[in-house]
Length: 100
Image (tube, rainbow, N blue to C red; front, side, top):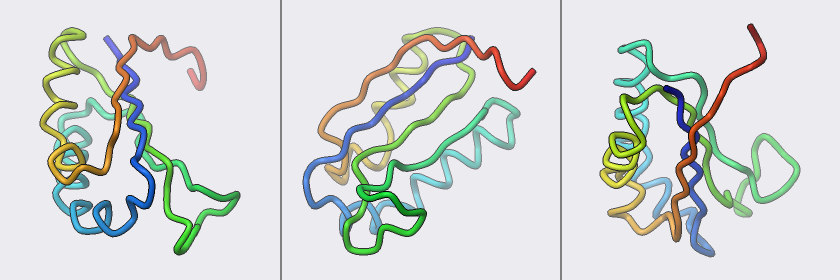
């Protein structure tokens, strides 16, 4: 089943986010290589693809996991958790309708 993993950043997370990004992206690439990643990306703090110093307010990952518990375990091991980028992570089952 698909799950939406919604990470919410702490204030002023940009420096910690950039330091942990290579390890975070490596895990996403592993999901992609396994054919389980639907989409992933950050939420810019301002209305721009490149928010510069404004940074990001969080991230969204939609990926396939065996269960909600498996999705939670995967999210709990995210390098952004250890780096204290995220203040909160919410995981919800996700039903993809479009695109087909």
